[in-house]
Image (tube, rainbow, N blue to C red; front, side, top):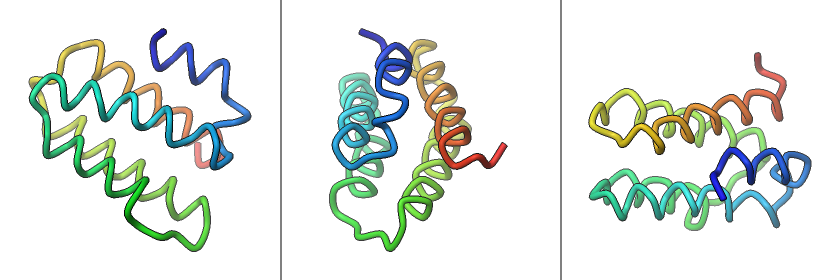
Length: 98
């Protein structure tokens, strides 16, 4: 199942601690399997190794990291690039930034 379909199915749960890491981990795993280990490690650290005072703080940092990956990794497979763009849009909707 694509990340976008998972996001649509878990849109409300994405803001909870239960659904959120799984969606990010799926993108991380795809990045890692395509040789983008640095980018995958960055996502892992943001979600699993750092402490955040608010969910908006986490979403903000994650959005920045995803946007940086999207811009700096021009050789991303189209499927992963699309999923990253959709994830950024979902974060924007969850946080009502745009």
